[in-house]
Image 1 (cartoon, rainbow, N blue to C red):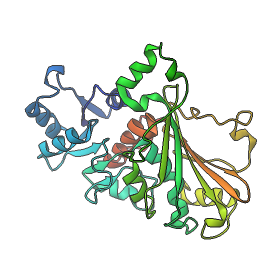
Image 2 (cartoon, rainbow, N blue to C red):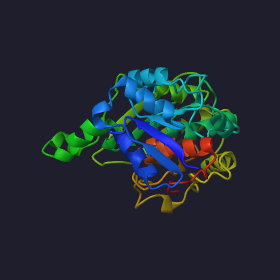
Image 3 (tube, rainbow, N blue to C red):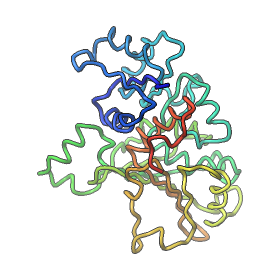
Length: 315
């Protein structure tokens, strides 16, 4: 049986990646809306309600509108916007989040795909909160270095046009500390307040690494890097898309430098712990277009429809 799948927003960066992932699969029948009907509400509604799974790759307002057009109770909506990521009526699309999360994704007809920065942050922080090591009221901070594809088609075009020397160096942004991923970063980790979060866009297409610095003496109990690695290994035991790297291993680095792009073209997340007896850095690395967007959406679909979780994905 082929599942009917519609991508609303198929012309955007995430939508195009989804079509790449899904186009070669024999268990998927892609429903394609005509280019001149992409903004026709009636035609969109027809496609949305004809689909077994509808991916929404749209801005928040357009995603909410798309959801309002769905009347078929059997249509599963997988939304890639920020509109529903903290809603109790939607399953958070991170199967590795905690025990029972896959069951929620499997049972729900409304699944919210995490943001790219949030995916990395949550995967690094949630196990330490659950293990009672990181207090919920810890004044947490984080920074993220990401490729320019996270800015969508306009930013990709800006970088790839060349001629602007300002784009040759990393550029911090969202300095008002109101980044759109902050609500889910707080809710899905269980911390009491949103982190001080500083994202930086770099002069490379894709790849992302979120770093979370910790003071050991502010934790609920004293732990070293190796002990945090063991917490990660226990939390993510059996997870095919999460790779926990050994603490203190020089092979994690390239001559002392960290490779942000090493997970590109995969759906994998690598977790690292660096530091010493006083201070630690947690680092989570992923492809912002893969596990940080389209790959995560496909993984959620696979869980929901009962396909092999790695179908169409590179581990």
